[in-house]
Length: 91
Image (cartoon, rainbow, N blue to C red; front, side, top):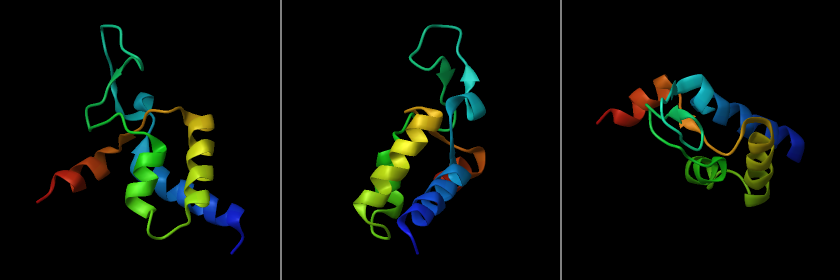
């Protein structure tokens, strides 16, 4: 499988579980860096999530490229989607 295809797959997996604050947060009344409250946890960086979740499955170069593309497209702060937040809170 070509590296570009692997990067795309990693990004899709990431985006199924994490989103930009504007998608999953609620606007805050006071000033904050993002302007959103991270109600499901975060903010997390893409590279931290990718390394933690997929670091043993994919080479670092794939994860770094995926993180850069995610940050270029969506920013540097990420939060779990509601479904992922529910899974993380289960015993």
